[in-house]
Structure formats: C-alpha cells, structure tokens
Image (cartoon, rainbow, N blue to C red; front, side, top):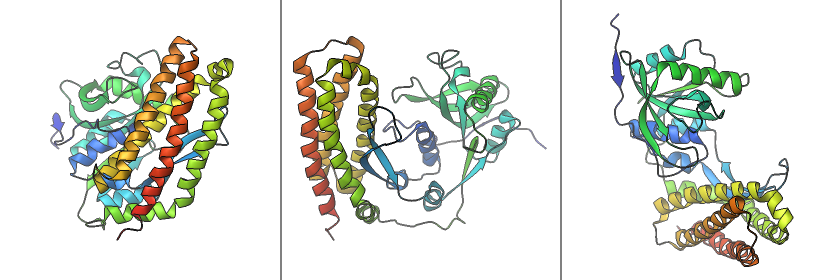
Length: 336
C-alpha cells in the first residue's frame, strides 16, 4: 500500500460573509464550497423570531432560529453525505484517512491547546470547530481554516501541527464532550446516488416557512415590545443597568448577528430594494447602535442620562419598524 505524504483538497476557502449560529457552520460553509453546494439550503431551514427563554436567569428576552427540519435532511437536499464519528482512538490518523478518501472534515477541539491562537492558548478553555482540508506528513501539519480572534469574522487558511491537533482534540474530550452528546468528527462527501431536491424554489420554501411559523414571528414582536418596556425600567436605574449590562451586550450582539443573516437571505430572495430588506437594514442599524452604546458603557461605566434616553428611544423605535417589517414579510406570502 502506497503511503501518501501530502494532500490538499481544492476549492476550500474561508467563509467570512456571515456568522451563522455557531462556529460549526463557519467550518461547514467552506466545505460546501468544495462541493460547489449552496448555503441557502441551510439558511432557509431557519425562521428568525424574538422570544423569551423562561429557563434563563436574568433577562429572558433574546432572538432565536426556528428550525424547519433536521440537519440530516438538509444534507440530503444539498446532495452531500455527512458521516459522523463519536469515539476516536487516533485523531491524527483518522483525519488523514478521511482526507485520503477526498473527504474534508470538521473536528471539535478545545482552543486552550491550540498554540496558533495566542488569545486562548493556555489561557481559556473554548469549545470550537476546525475545517481540515489537507495534511503534510513531512511537516507533520494539517491544513485548516481557523479565525484570528474569537469575537469577529476573520477566518483564514493556516496550519496546525499534528501534536496540537491531538492535544486540542483530547482537550475537547476531557473538558467538553459528554457521552454521546455530539459527534467528535464529521466527514463529508458528495454522491450522485443521493436523492435530493433539484431546482428548489427558494422563495416558495421561504413563504411556506413564514406561514408555518406566523404565530412565533408575530408573538416574537410582542416579546420585543415587552422587553422594550422592561429595558426602560432597567436602564433608568443605574444599579440595575450595571447588574445586567454584560447580559444585555451579549443579547444585543446576538440579535445583530442573527438579523444580518436574515437580511443576507432576504436579499438573495427578493433583491436589495424590496421594502422588507430596507426595513431590515434600518432594524440592524439601530440594534448595532444599541450594541455599540451598551458595549461602551460596559467598559466605561459612565452613566449619562442623555445616552440612556437615546437607547430607550431607539429600542422603542425598533418595535415600530418591526411591526412594518413583519407586515411586509407576510404580504410576500400573498404574492403569486
């Protein structure tokens, strides 16, 4: 048997257009590119809605993705196989085996052990995924896609040593993996034998999902309005604001990221000039200003009534725009 010393799969590029759900998808999207598959299948598998999480301590308001069907079905629609592995004895050889079969992989790691990421290396245990698309036995390295910083989209191609990969994977198993909770490794392949949806009507799929989730979407706007009233109470009390500021910043950042995904999807469906896209852009701009202002406050703790008043007014304004946006969304479902 001939031993291959070096292999790199082609057409695997970093994905930095959006942060979608979790790092797993920013690892998955470059692999979809390798197989010339469209990410819209995955984006259309979600509808976005505000909600209240009764199981959460503190502020319960947030935004959520409502999933239409299991991920495994979306893989089939796209036309790819996803094989999962739960127990792995030798992660280095398992990755090499998959790559030798022309299968790019995603692997879970603990970034604490990843020496190429100084912000977390030996400082912070951080659950993360890597796309792996090549290896070099001579250099003892894997070709991966990894981002520069935890808090922004800056994915790039780089190399990780076999030793680091092994340590990162062992760290994941030791610090994060619960028995049978999530697979350890995903390998991907394309096959013409898969029965998949050809020439899917993206717009019709989106309309169907809107209709099916009307109650959650409309109810979500009511959750937003309740939060706006609650936020005013919190914000006008400096001690309450100080107690809740970190959670608020996280919520606002999540809303901003989710709304950007929603806008990206809508632009693909109806074009940038549709009223829904324009209104959504206004919503994103306002949530972004709220996030920036609260982030600044979190670091400075300088309480200014004028800034607080602007924040309250901005969130109330978002409520009004959301009413118009949702009305426009559902008007799309009535169009032929």
